[in-house]
Image (cartoon, rainbow, N blue to C red):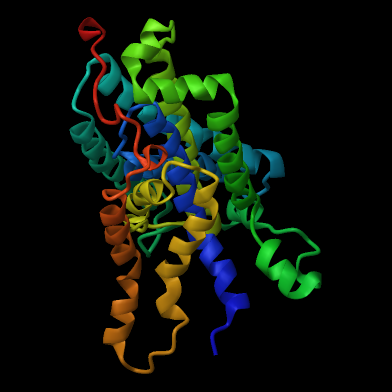
Length: 329
């Protein structure tokens, strides 16, 4: 029988990197920037956190302070992701480079950056396997509420996750409130819809694009950190992320640019990602491979359906992917 109590927590764990990536990309796209470098930014955020954690563990000999064990990797992750966001903005907003090409180049750069420094750390440790284990730091990130186990299925379904999982949900809800209910959020949406009109109204286009893209990049970077420190139990392996960054971008379209909807949608995508592990298929491995295709089939269907939407509120920002030339105003 299908074991939902075992399935749901694993779907949630799979969904958190997608939720971080989708929330960050939603904020970015609301400013009119189409950042296809999210997979690379998540990769850089993860390896930056790993480097910070590795250096801290090495300097203390394993006697970690709980606050620093969490703060150092998170600050390292946020700094690495911020630098990637600044690089993207400098190229696309200041220099007005093509956003699609820049994003793809940053994804390639981010993966190469992570693999290079990940391989360098592996050589420093002299490990016999191609991975780095940061189990001491990971224990702080993956620790759940102490009374979760005593609450049975309720604790297993809702209280058995590390703090980054709840932070992802909180950020998604706050982002949704920010975009809909605050003056700054409305200004950001105006920049994404019609930057010329927003500029005429006195809104600083460059400032909003930089701020939204950099904050979105930092949020996405936390998804990479979560993957390593919580989902992978502190183990870094090169090229281990798979295509989660691209699924996060697809999730933005699936949620029609609404971060709060992304919470349940990311769990759906996370569940589809691991469904093949829970559906009995016997020894028929070909059927399992078909189940592995589900997230990508859903993504294709979503892209087709999104192109058929007629409601304006379900369309992407009008200036998405277009550079703003004030001289043409």
